[in-house]
Amino acid sequence: MSEEYKKVVQEVVETFGKDKTRLMDIARGVHARTGHLSEDIVGAIAEALGCHRVEVRDMASFFAFFAREPKGKTTVRLCNAVVERMKGADDVAKAFEEAVGARFGETCPDGAISLEHTPCMGMSDQAPAAMVNGKVLTNIRPDDVRGIVEAVRSGTLHEHTASSIDEVETNLRQAGSVVFAPFERGAALRKALGMTPEDVINEMNKSRVRGRGGAGFPLAMKWDFCRKAKGDAHYVICNADEGEPGTFKDRVIMTERADLMFEGMTIAGYAVGAKEGFLYLRGEYEYLLAHLEQELAKRRRMGLLGENVCGCEGFDFDIRIQMGAGAYICGEESALIESLEGKRGAPRDRPPFPVQKGYLGQPTTVNNVETLCCAARIIECGADWFAAIGTKDSTGTKLLSVAGDCDAPGVYEVEYGITLEALLEMVGGENAQGVQIGGPSGQCVAPKDFGRSICFEDLPTGGSTIVFGPERDLLECMDGFLEFFAEESCGWCAPCRAGTSILRMQFDKILKGRGTADDLKKLEEIGNTMKTMSRCGLGQTAANPVLTTLRDFPALYDARTRDEQFVPAFDIKDAMREACAITGQKPHDLEE
Image (cartoon, rainbow, N blue to C red):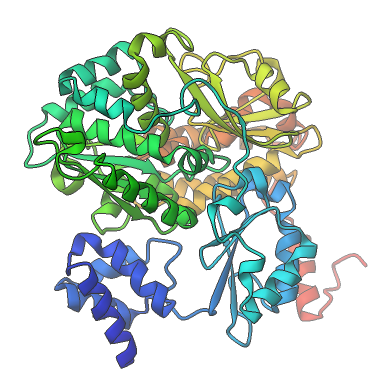
């Protein structure tokens, strides 16, 4: 390893006080300056931290944004999620390959540009989208690509890419009465500090607010468990690692209402007895970092963070932003905590739960961005006000990220209880053949059920809403979701590690028209095994694209299956034709 790289490692490690729990930040800092984390660099980091290199290698190899070997000076990461493909990402990919002179997964001969695919990057409302060394490009068309590549090579990329949050479309289509209503900085926090922590938690209980991440766990219960748990310290974590394909509501909140989110975090800190909070920000949202740091600095200047917050003697609380590095599984709270501690983002066995033993083994509450915004509003406007919105078991409003085949993709703040039919009319997607509610891990809803309501009692969702028009091959879209889960599995448990791949292979047989009724039964068996045997939520929900379409779209499967007892998974003649075309040979038993 060069002396230059050794110096970089030493400087970055010193910047973070040789703190092994800051390994993610150290890796990001070194990678930003070297462009990769080779085995030599990994060893140098381990030596500087006084730990074994396997600990550093384990973390570095887990995250998609860390290259293990040198790549191009600039990396173009084009999103190839389902919605992006619906909007033309494949054609954009071809244009990049032609302009760069390399295929995806490769670096061009002169070493200037590497091409990589990446899953959903939170821009489905303005797809196709890509990141170029952390900068964001949206609404890319094939005709734009050559100009982008020329700008990369000439060093004038800023003219073609988003250099600030203002250049990424917000697409807030409908503001509601909670998250996007007018907000007075500090009002809710000062009111909270005039109450006891127990009274704050009781106000959450009266409002019946539930977590907005999808699981819907009662917020008051989580804060109460955390406050009462014994520990040397308590922590608050805001989960801003929204990686569910088709979800981007947190991006809009952090653009338009970051202050409200931070206010909710501070109120949470007061309620549970924490002095420190963390915002875990997904790597795809790096372009928001400067904006968020500015908001935090402003709150510190106003006395809304730091020592004796708002003059409240003894209440010290501050917030640090932790960047991720491209791992969907870190949206799961225990995997997020592992990453925050400087480890690979693998989910933990539970119990104990984070409220008992979370960050550094201490009581920790992990809450969604939207949830914390609701908490601040509840204190500001009162539990009774909040409880009067929505339904009996789903109080308040819900932010929905709507994308796909509709006239007006974007974020909509609606009251819980809205029907899917009413939502489709609102977004211009009335002719949908199906709607994916809750992202790939949710369910695909058929037109016969468009009268159902979006709420915890009926159709729960973290926010992702993907509309599929009548011209779409719905099963091809489901295959894209299966590909995503197979790629994003952390590999810890066999039901998920093997199950995601086996399920996709079985599904591929159906797509190719080589399936039978028995194959459909096998699909269901594999999916149900994954649902019951997997270690965490990823594996437990990864089969939902298959299971829900088998249930609600049986005709699509019937059209692709044969009325035979057995059909092989592939056609030997077709396979031989492909091989012959490559080798230039022609077996005598193949047709002309």
